[in-house]
Image 1: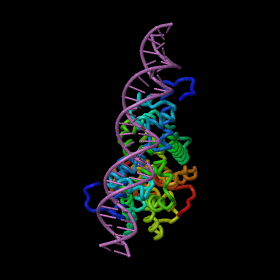
Image 2: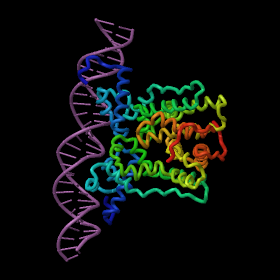
Image 3: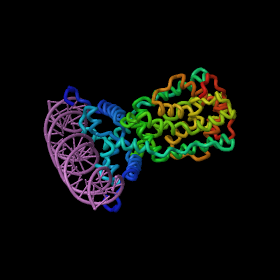
Image 4: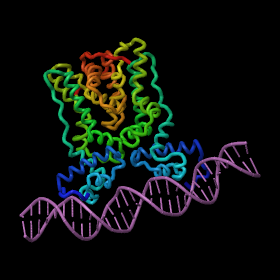
Length: 202
Length: 202
DNA sequence: GAAATTAGATACATGGCTGTAGCTAATACT
DNA sequence: AGTATTAGCTACAGCCATGTATCTAATTTC
């Protein structure tokens, strides 16, 4: 905390602290977050942290709240299957980012889960955990590419759910082929379109 | 630690400690587990814990390792749909149990996730996170009720994945109707059988 | 350039968990 | 009954995080 000739203030300092708390939570977990640890990593004394936040979890939630929003899935040139795969890939990228991992950690931590506000949940959690393929499916349903009544809440969740489970089970990020398998074998059948990809039964 | 006239030993004591660590992790989270806290809840001094385990996470993993296995899903009187719903209900029950919640907490905790042995993963994690509908689907595929080549790894995961996502998103346990919607709108279409239940599009 | 703001440094009492040690006493073993 | 185990109790030094207070100095604002 000594050998920096310039002194950070405002936005710049806060950004450094947000980065620090996200890095810290990846390393030690939510339950072992401390003001001390965050301060050490951000190279700022604890006193600076206490001026703005009252507790390590507040710092973490604030960091998540100020994350840049993820890219929105886009719909391309009438390519439902390709758009779905791309939407899932966006989701994977987010889930593997520090923010995505922090969200997973928070949701299973009793102390922090209780502190997640409605607003934060909307902005960071819900919108990312379940909106990727939905956007795409909505678009093609509106275009009449498949019966709109098949787009139920359950169906809108299939892709995200399978990607999540895959990440939990294996920890390794799914390849594009894996994502295509999810689209072909689970999503497309649910909206009444037969699968096109190859299948490897178990 | 005073007003117990009998003194626990061996199995009985260990059971009490296992119960204590599972209760503790539900309340404070993995990262805030302490030998002190576990001992307090089990009404035994820390020294007793140190005689067997070297740190709180060892206690937790040991507790999970000694959990009773969950009930296996059974296949009934040629009722694929009903068997699938029952399999998912078994999974919900397990996921909401102390052991199920502890598993979720462990998987997102950097320190403990690293300590999960292959054996424990097999016995407690993998077998529970992904085996419920698979058993049922395998049975009916063998009976020729649907094309066996449709039973891919992705398809075997659909039900469990959607239940997991639902538990993460809303925290509330799904009703039997919710489970039936998952079966009708996601699993059955994927194995080539049309849905039978009512649908509510979004 | 002077005043106001705010980061950085240091200190301190408090409290909790750690890991170990040594003792007492209940239970099991033979 | 006598012995071996092992739970329960107490104590202790060490470490780390907590909050708070106080001072300094860098940076912004006017």
